[in-house]
Each structure stands twice: as structure tokens, then as C-alpha cells.
Amino acid sequence: MNLCDRDTIRALLDRHGFRFSKSMGQNFLIDPQVPADIAAASGADETCGVLEIGPGIGPLTAELARRAGKVVSVELDKTLLPVLAETMAPFSNVEILQGDALRLDLAALAAEKFQGLTPIVCANLPYNITSPALQKFVETPCFQSVTVLIQKEVAQRLSAPQGSSEGGAFSLFLQYRMEVEMLFEVPRDKFLPAPKVDSAVLRCVRRNRPAVEISDEAFFFKLLRGAFLLRRKTLVNSLSAALPGWDKLAVQSAIASCGLPPDVRGERLTLQDFAALAEALREKPGI
Image 1: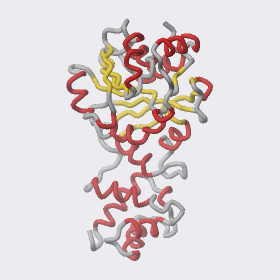
Image 2: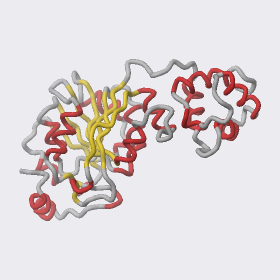
Image 3: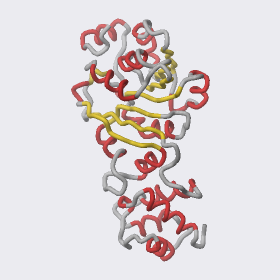
Image 4: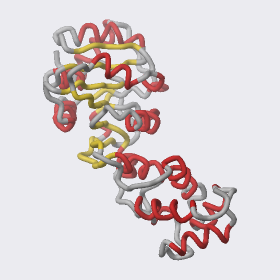
């Protein structure tokens, strides 16, 4: 069964009485080369256990199943379960779970389902859960890589070089633990129904150790978020608003001690800059 053929998709969905849900961000791939390329990019092989979120009718699931030791796909929409039961019937190494992936204990799931395998993530993610899903994947240390199809603009932002205007707090959070790269674009006409924006494949590979050494991770991430609190303001003003325990002069002094210009904005800092600034601020009164 060609799960990317329009006529096949429509017949399959009609047979099961399925209707697309905008609230769930359902857009099914209609070019068979795309799921094949995504699965290949994930690096999945027989040593891997792959977690997939939002399989839809299963075109990417099938490609992963042909490569991986095991695939566990989590689908929120109960009406897709009978569809997936039909389309995934040929694959003995695929397990479909119904549920909300954002509420699952992914570490426990991987430990139970992927014994003896290297856990990775590969998915055509619904646009509306991109950030929380990526955060959850990154914060689950057992996943060695994450390969996802997401909105192109978001993929560009998350893979932006550190210190560029395209990046932000979340891109730096992601790059702190992962090597991040945008691999290739997927035009909107490759989906049914077609979304209003283009997509791209983002690949994140876990670093052996974080990108920078820090002494207080919680404060470091608080600093990252604070630096972008007032995006159009200087770093001094943004951090003064985000860190009530430090007065403006203390923030100015810490920024100067790091060799940064007084009018610098948060978007111009690299992870190394933020690490140095975190240490400088920790030496100031009020922490």
C-alpha cells in the first residue's frame, strides 16, 4: 500500500470514517521520497529503538520499521488507531500507543520498550507541539538523537548560529545539549491537506557533555530566558527586569567584566558569553 498516494489515502480514510482535525495539526505526507529521506536522516538501524510522535496513517512509521530494531509510535487521535492497525499490519516491530506524548514518562517508556536498543526520536511533529515536544526530548537523556519535520521558520531559528539575530532562548537551550542542524526543506505541497507554510527537517544529536561548563544550571537557564524577556531592549534592561535580585549597576558591571559592550542585546551572545555572564552575576550581591 502506497501511504503517500492521494487516492490511496482518501480511500483508506473514507473506509475508516476519518476526518482531519485542524486542532491536532494533521497534515499527511504525499511524496514517498520525503518519509524515506527523513528515516534515512535519522540514522535508524537494527540497533535502534525509535520513538515516533503523531504517525498519522504511518508513511514515516513504515520507513522506520524497515530500518530500526523497533518503532513505538504515539498517536493522540483515537480515530487513527484502526487506520494504523491496517497500515502497520505488515510490520511486527511496530507498536502503536494511544496517548498524549507530552504527558508520558518518555524515559520509562524507552526503558520498557527499547531494552538492548539505542533510543532515538524521529517524527513528523504537529506544528503546535514543536517546542514542548523538543524540550521533552532534550530533557530525556536516553534519546541520543532527535530528527523531526517541523515548520521551516522554526527549524531555521533553532539551528541559527549562536550570536545571530535569528536565534533565541530556546535555540540556545537546545544547542546547549545538542548539535543542531537543519537538513533539508519540504515544500507545503508535499502534504494533504497543504499547510500554509513550508517545513524542514531538523536533526539534533546529543553532545557527550554540554556545550559549556557551568556551576549552576538553573540560574544559567534563568539568565538565558531573562536575556530575551525584552527582545528589543538592551541586555542590561532585559536582565534588570528579569533578575529582581540584581540592580542595574550590578548587571552593567557584570556585562562589562565579560568584555561585552554596554548596549549589547541578548541575541548577540553565545553560550560561552552566557556562561561567563552567569558566573560574573553569581559573584554579585543578591544571589
